[in-house]
Image (cartoon, rainbow, N blue to C red):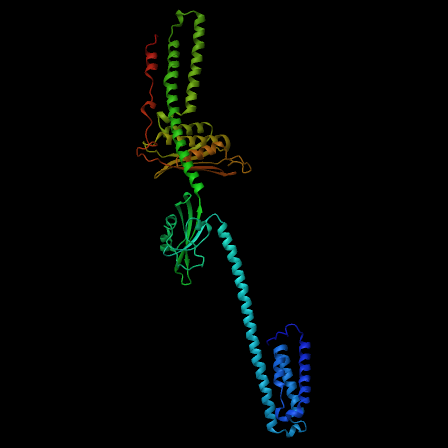
Length: 500
């Protein structure tokens, strides 16, 4: 039942009471003018009163008023003295027609009020929805304009449909009408670089991530761009969206880090070469002189010398022996002699022997590496294995271990597993300098080294190192010939020419 403008604020009792009051007033007015109009216009003013009641008080009070007026007017003005049982058909038809006309008026007015209500409700909903859309559009626009990323939307021809402030700052025209491509020009050269991969997104229909370089008014910029298709209701691609994050600082930092790593690799290689040179000079120079002097002293005829001289010679021989041993120990600490004399496999076998000498049973599987592996790479492998064995011996408490060194295509893979305590999970200093050193050595040759601590079950060390290409570059060359030293001629002549 539709409500009138007044019925929204009045209670039902008041509305029905006002309707009866209007009926009484209309009946009194009709009684007053009855001598003038007579029975021919018996329902004069009745339908008008019913329409006013329906409009102001509602359909319910109007129906009640229509019935009340019909009964009152019929008894008072149409057939006031006629017995109802002998009621003539004519006056009754007039009364029914008037009542039907009033009912039609009530129904029409009710439908009009319902339609008005529906229109008002729809208008309010539309206004509310528009306000919410404007609010969300403001939120979205402010969010996009204040983000550091370049956000844009293009049609299939590469023309710009939407962009935030960052996209407009790069020179792209922005369509403020929200989708019309009229008046849009082709994107500038700077954004042609960013849009060069649009065709791949259109062809695959999938979101993709790209690293792109673009020339902008303030210089060259690097971007990580996520591009995605925009689909319509028929799942057809109608546009391509993109979110480009400026990673220029990260890109420059990565390039700078790569340059520094290259310098560091060269420095490490030079350092290893210098170590090899120093060890060769120590071994073939100083130590050989000391060995020669010791041999000459030992060959002296003690019987022709005074007793005091013999004791002094024995003391000197002992000092020379200790000096020779200390020198050899220093050389082994600087650079393993086995690595230069016998190769990587023998050097690792020596490490395994030292570990077994410390009471650890080692199950080893070694696959020989190519003969042309650069010395710097051999040193990296040796140092990682050496540090892993050292950590096992000092910290794990494991009675046995498994070690594997193999070649997997162009990758050298090594794995060391022990069955000790696995480290203390509560300690925060497990990532010590030794482990960091292994990981950095692996990273400098383009590989990786991982250490997995398993409390109560042991530790697993794995490393994967890519073999350097022996294409004649600086990293794959053999060290200079002067570094591959044998005994020096001076040392040989000093020993051979010494008197016995």
